[in-house]
Length: 248
Length: 262
Image (cartoon, rainbow over all chains, first blue to last red; front, side, top):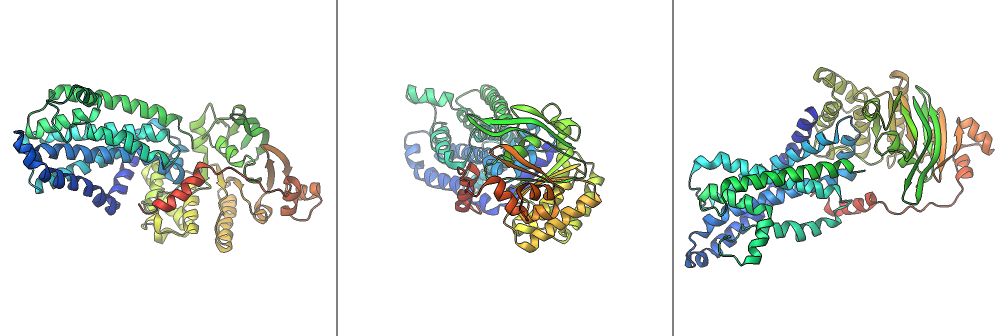
């Protein structure tokens, strides 16, 4: 228990202390919100789909959670050669606890990031349909965070240096984001694209967030939650297995 | 305290450590010397249960490194060749984290922490972030951290690499004091032969994965008919320069400069 707690706390302290990282990682969602939200708004309205800014905000919250979470997981690579990972690996603690502590820490950081983006969206004009749903929103954000931190951990356990990072960003994280329905509605998509969105785990996260915040979900909330939880469990197990095999 | 019997480690076709055996007695200061790529780091990884040997056995403080790795991990402290502190945490937090990882109760953690930070003269800097520390200060902090949980054996992998002579002297001073005061067994590697000559009770020289000489400095000098350890070392291992392939660590180091202060 002590191990998990102290490693969780460490991730949090590192996050709070890196002001430039917090501000830097808020730039991108802000840009998406303003440029796309206001830029595509009129076209969206003309197509009879309603207020694009309202529609987009949950997607952008999910995006910032996705990026922060994957990056938190991938950070193991830095730790692996420069630091701290060796210190934890020689300690008399189970690898599983180290993995859980780190992953929970990363997921917490990504959740906080998502909440900050939520408030930024509020300032920019986003209005959730009801505030009653906010605890559930927080839960979904945390699930998304946990899923992708575990995924990042699994990937990082198989990578020896940062060279593969661009590859992961461009061929995994970006497609996950763009094909999740964060930017466009799932209804009325061409069949092939719809198929892809169905295997994209973030789709269910975005859809659940959108359903809770502004209504009009594509999938039933319980289906989204079940799928998200199952994939999260899968990546947690995969991450643990790969992490336990990691050699420094 | 350390009993190594016929251990080997292979990476594919390459044999990094080839059937070596040695013993380190309790309270001894043991120097493990060898050129780059000789198998030192691989041996330390096996001794510290970070990786398992392909054959042979290692007993640390009475426990087998493969069968009983948790007991082994409790028995030793280590200062790695590469820095392993968390730069974004304070000195105090790094120590505290170590204490928690090793399951130390809070009261003991606090008293030991203070004792050790005072020992390495960093107590008044305890609340500073480690990234503000010089190389020598980081090393001292790593030494203090490695000792937190009262280890019986202390591994130091090139503890003085890249430090100025003043700091190096200082660090060996600490290590000698420790050996006297806490009756701790010390196992270290270094490329500075005069350091090994000055401080080690026993020396083993490893090359191409095999131990090619072992004994006190006097034995080695006699065996090689030289009058200092550096000459003895060169006569044992030859004068050719060892070229090691850049490890991923080296690659990371150059990247780190690019991404520094992210």
